[in-house]
Image (cartoon, rainbow, N blue to C red; front, side):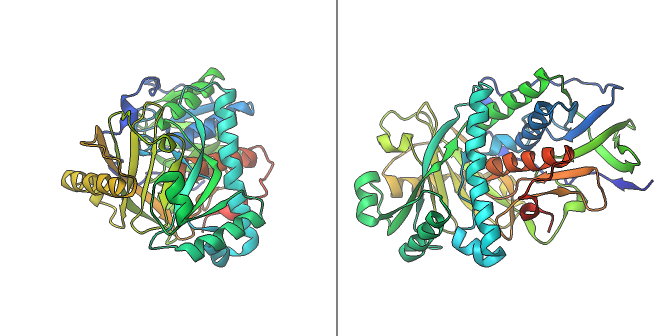
Length: 409
């Protein structure tokens, strides 16, 4: 029986204070000590990916133990702006060139379905998380101009994804934003990510799952009939399967040249009563580098972010946080005319991206019963829905037809 290190990468998962951690119903109580009970599955990580995996597994009747080295819902999940997009960071036209038409088309259609599935799940579980379906506007920028956006619309329509090309005059008339062109699409959503995660964890707990924190896993080994995980304190836990949902603090076995950690910044305004009516109902992002993205919450706060940098450590500099917040606020004003004043909340975080914009859901190399869900890319929550579906199916012995698109690479 070979023993492998399971100490995940460590990072400061956020700097500053995300708005979401100050909202009600965004926390979950955890047990302080481990039980001797054996579980079907141990889920490592109590953020959005771990919550979705635990919910899917307990819905399928599995007994689940959830572990985290931090309190639940207090890792990188609250740093999300929770623009739950069906649009993948890499446009369909470009993804087709990168991985082939058939696989790219399946990735995009699966992403659309994942948003629909999440909205339905939040409704079914009656989660108090401000989940709301919203259309998205993708604005022309220095990465894609009018002609490229027109081609993108044709590609999406070809596979049944509804999209509308807006020329400059349409954009100005409907939204008061002056850009060459834009794509309007209707299959995205937004939510409070901390409340969403907490609600999913509570659903799992209601089905007899357990959450223990703080617990740090340091070693793991595959047994003839399961897996064994060792904690920093020397305890040994045994289960049929394990799923690592540790995000950017990934297992060393999952390190690959196909993904790397960058930095991103975000802010939330105070509630604004004079927002244009359309801004309450649409999420917006741009085909630019660096790019701006924004939406509002139900109280009229503007949630905006962007200014991503390739440097993985720059998010931890407080001076950089203030500077980036000023740039984001100014870009928002230049584009929409909306002045947010001094942001009520500002935060930054590490952010992992992949070469093809797609996440990684797979068995950990060298293991049959240990899985990893790496919802990397700008669609973290959407991708985590797909990851939970694929891993739950694999554990149930019913492989997902799209699993190979998101394999370890």
